[in-house]
Length: 119
Image 1 (tube, helix red, strand yellow):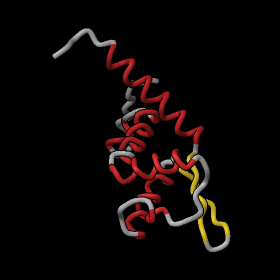
Image 2: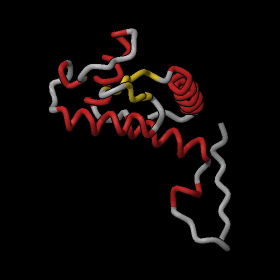
Image 3: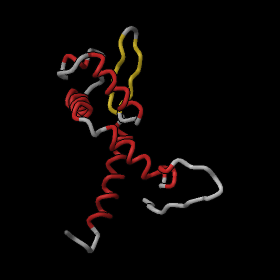
């Protein structure tokens, strides 16, 4: 993973754009899983070992609309997929993307652990 930033002074940029695409993606996913409800949803989907077509809010102590918003955030970073089937949506973990995120986090923590300095 490259942590080098290239700054082009001739173009107008959003500040996050000066960071590598890898860091931007890692940041987006980390932000998406930073809420305990989203972690609970991911764990629930993992523990059921199948796609869920029912109402996840029956298993998470939040309202249906709140769970829906959290599902939207997880879908936005491709940690889950939601496929419409009739009147329901089947939610599944996106294992390939989860494995990619795990590798990115491992790379980050390997870099952090290799530091010579310590507090």
